[in-house]
Image 1 (cartoon, rainbow, N blue to C red):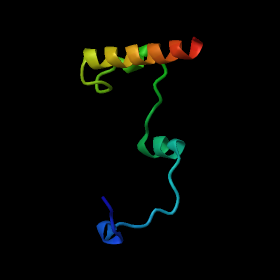
Image 2 (tube, rainbow, N blue to C red):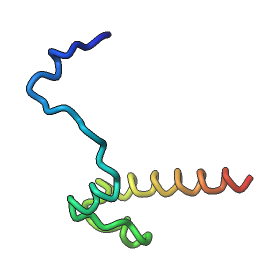
Image 3 (cartoon, rainbow, N blue to C red):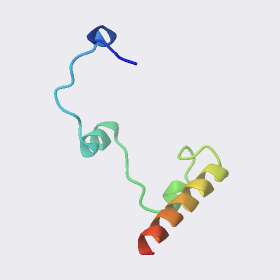
Length: 66
């Protein structure tokens, strides 16, 4: 599949990508600092989704130790 310049008509050209720090500052986002932060409403749609995320993080951290 190919795209042409016509597909992007009306959109301003990207001059430089915005850093993560700039995005966080602009959106007023606070970083997650603890497991309690992860359990706050609105972070995950369900307890199951939070649990799945934590299992993934645990596995990734322990894979680095092996």
